[in-house]
Structures are given as C-alpha cells and as structure tokens.
Image 1 (cartoon, helix red, strand yellow):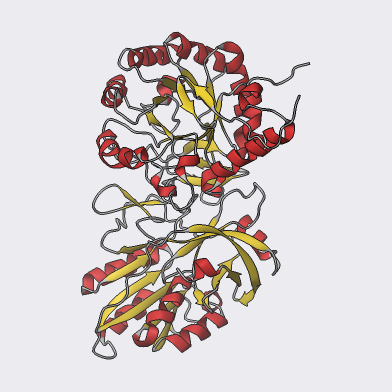
Image 2 (cartoon, chains in turn purple, blue; image 1 turned 90 degrees about the vertical axis):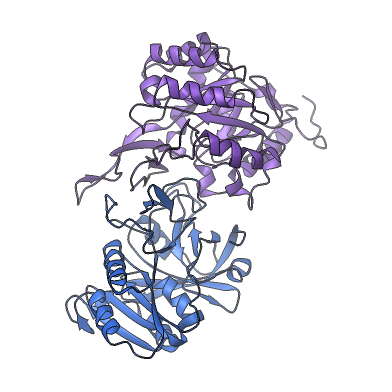
Length: 311
Length: 274
C-alpha cells in the first residue's frame, strides 16, 4: 500500500443517505442541542450532531439523584427531560442550522401515537438530516424500552414511523436483550435505513449505609468505557446480521476506541459520556482518526468498515 | 456568563490545611481572571478512566490574578487521588462555570452562612464584598469548622464572625440558623440584611425558611453531583417551586432561595466533592 503522508486521509462516509464529512457524531443526551458546547467545540468540524431526545410534548424528567459514578462509567436516570418538539424547532434547530454539520434528531414517546406525532412534526423540516428513533431508553416506564425489548413491538412501531416519513430512519437499539440480531432484523424488515447501537445497559447501585438505591429512579442506564466491549460485540453481531449502516457507540473516549467499532462494522460512531469528561473529546477523536489513517497508509476510513480479521 | 474552557492547570500547592481539609492552588490565568464569587470549576483528578468524571469545586479565591484556590476533604476515591497529586503536575480544569452570586446592593449588609464544607464560595464572596459582611459558620463540632487558614482569610475580610456548633464546642450551642436568627433580632448597624448561604441541603432549607419568615432576601449556592458541569447531562437538576427542575451547573449554582422546592427532593445527599 502506498503511503502518502502529505495527503489528508478521507474520513467522509455515507450514512443511510446522509453524507457526513467524518464519521464522528455526538450521542444523544450527551451534547445537548449543540449550543452548550459552542465555547469548546467548533460544530463545523463534527460529522454530525445527534441531539438530545425530543418528544411531542415537554418532559420534566425524573427526581434527583439522577446520576451515580461507577467504575469507568456512570449510571443515569434523567428521564428524557426535554422542552418538546415545538421548542426544539423554534429555539434549538435554528442555531444548529448555522453550522455545516448533519443534524440527526433523536425522538421518543410514551405511546405509538407520541412517536407518530413527533415524527410527523419533523418530516420535511429543512435542516433535519434524519431521525434516530429511541426505542431503548431504560429510564421511562412506558416509552422506549417497552418497545425496544420486544421484537414484535419494535417492528410495529418502526413500520408505523416508516409510513410517516421519508427522512432516513435510524433505530437506536437496546443492549438489554438476549439476541441483538433479532432486533436488527426487525428494524431492517420495518424499512429502517440504519441502526444505532448501543443505548445504555440497565444497571443499579446501592448505598450500603442507607440501604437505598443511589438513584431516585432505583435503576439507571450504564454508560462510559465500562460498556465498550459489550457495545463492540453487539455492533459486530448486528453487522453480521443485516446490511444496514450502523452508528456504533458505547464508551468511546479516543480514536482507537472509535476504530474498534469501525472494524466491527460501524459506518459511523458517536461519542457520548466522553463529552462530559473531556468536552473536546469529539475533536480529539476526529484528529486521532486522521493521524491513525495517515500513519497506517489508509486512504479512506471506509476501507476499514467491518474489516476485523477473524483468521 | 464568560466562555468556559478546559485549561491545563499547573498544581502550585496541594497540602493539608487542617481539620480534615486540603488546600490546592492551581495556576490557570485565563480562568482566574474570569472567575467571580460563586463560580465553580470541574476538576479532573486523574487522566485515568477510573474515576471517570471530573469533580465540581467552588472557587475559594483568586490569587495574583493567575491562580485559583480550592479546598477539599477526602470523601471518596476522587478526592483521595487528588490528595496524592504533587505540585508541578498539571490537571485538566474546566471553568469558570455557573452563574455566581449577585453583588450586594447599596445599603445592604451581606450575611454569609457557611455550613460544613460549604465555605469556599463564601470566602471568595468575602474577598470581594466582605467589608460590611458578617459570617455565620456552623458545624457539628469545632473540629468540622473551616480550616484555620480559611478562617484567617475570613477574619481579614469580614466585619464579624459568629460560630455555632451542635455540641457547643465553639460559639453558640445549636444550629447556625439559631445564631443567624439571634442576629436578625438585633442586627448590628443599619444595613438591610441579605443572606448568602452554602452548605448541606438541610441547613440551606432551614436558612431559607428563616429568611422567608423574616422577609430577608436569601441566595443559596447548591451542591449536587454533576457529570458535565455544562448543562447537558441534566444530572444535577433540582426541583423548583415553579414546577419542573433547574440545573445547578447552568441556572445555578446560586439560586434565590424562594425558587428552590426544598421539600421536593427525594434524597438529601449533596456532595460537591468525592
């Protein structure tokens, strides 16, 4: 392979019809609506932003305590607090549209009707590149995980949304299932254009003195580097099962972490909890990918997708 | 709010300050010149992945326009790692963050109420607006009061200091609210009192009730667990009387005490540091 260190490697990817200048996205719920990071991250440099989950109506969220730190990770039970789709469209999206970055809107609901309402509201809105459907939040009773841990319910929900929008539809899958490939196939069969995985792993921590759970919600979603091997494994399994492009996420802190996901079969990656720890983590991952490809003499990141060697 | 950035801060000093506290001085001129009383920073105690998150610390002082001073106690793995950091090393510190205390108005007498390890932001406040201020420092016992160096700094910055300990080992025997209530009965001087408080949640709730009873304006600096300090993780939200939640890191950490729903919190655990 010819090494040309003067030429910048090509990081661009095509994700379910969305052209990204690089594969690095922000995981939903870890980057707000972009504006919160404006002092630290030049949003023009990001492949895309997956915004904090948006619902048809505003959601107050769960009572505190909402977070608890765990070894190399954290538990959260925020409860999908968000201002609702109307405020998103009037106050958040206009800010993001100033930037040359793909805006993928994460959506969720408590019922099929909720999901449909927010999908219809966002369909055809200029500046929205695609929808990521959260069917996997572990922290709200009715919404999310009820759909995401039942293959039939997942299929029905995603099929219903497919009929309501032409936007690229990306299903965000739950890792809290026995066989991730069943859910990947259900999403493909429902007509989804891509997959995001993984959402957080359901966890719990207890204060042994008070004998109470650390989180007011009792259980929460585990994220951070602690879950990365689980996430890489699930991305690899899903990539074997379906031909859909995958956004890989779960504990990515560095470019090397991101490359694990790419080799396992991810077309793009999302940086999540790392944004809390190092607000410039996305930029570090992007420049780290450039350096790695240049050093390895790889002209385009796309050459590495799914290229984990089994022999 | 000033732009908050991540700075690589040189550790200038990190030593035992007595009474279970440690004092760390970090050189971060760009951060220091922007810092105001009530601001906090997110400090990463190590570059390793465990512990993963940065810790919030209220800024106690700005020294020579280039250093920030923080106090901490060893309450968990994070702060015990911080204890072992030697001068000369650098640590990632993000800030200044938060809204800060409002400046006292003309003719107002600030009453600073410090409970437990909540004194650092009030020490900063005292440095800026302390001349007519009175400090009320409360704790379980004498050994849990702010360390000697911080008390020296308070002494040089405020008009008077009132101690309250629950076991009576220093000052008034009882809660700091008792000492504050006694003062409000017969205030020294003619200034209109305004309360600025930082400390454990139950103390702040009690101070807030007292302030409401006496019709005294009251600002509280809240301590909550945080993951990001940027307003994105929504982990530090507290219930408010208007309904819903406000983020301590973004809308706070300083709130008008009437805004906070003191009864609405499921747990009383705060914990700015661990």
